[in-house]
Image 1 (cartoon, rainbow, N blue to C red):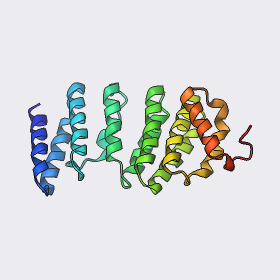
Image 2 (image 1 turned 60 degrees about the vertical axis):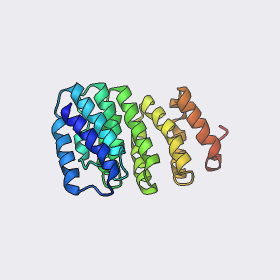
Image 3 (image 1 turned 30 degrees about the vertical axis):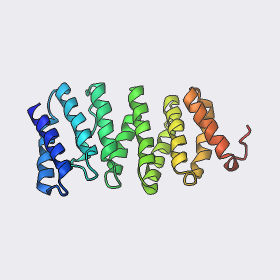
Image 4 (image 1 turned 90 degrees about the horizontal axis):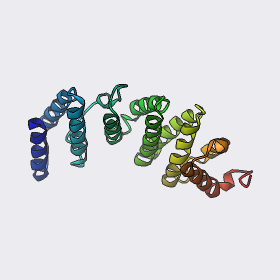
Length: 210
């Protein structure tokens, strides 16, 4: 608690400086890494503070390897959720391939809620990042679509609507692949998403009325 409060106070003071020394960022990062091995309750507090530090400035006060936030099988659910938030914030063109590889594994997890959250995270990254990175996310989602499990398919359809809203003319070629799975779409959100996709991109579908 002493260390975390010290972090908060230093982060507050740094709002009044124009430049943060690289050595300070390194010391911050090393201290955070050392705290990530604490019991779950303290681990959670550290992760929440990581999120605050990543959001505190335009240039983050931390430089951390994304692997520190990969989810372990025995992590409590609140740790898993918070690690997903950290991965989202740490994602950029450089870290995206490793993060996507990890999220794809979570998406095929036997834990249905974890699987859905991982797919949602991939969709959120496609919206957050640039066009080229979004294309990588879309390829990952299309690979997962072939997994063929209903809840995976439905979550992918739901997130695809948001991707198409952000990039309306970029991923039209994927639409014919999506509509192959209309029979798997049963939940209200995924139904709404599928209807939105078909009605907005009917020109790309010769049998859209069907």
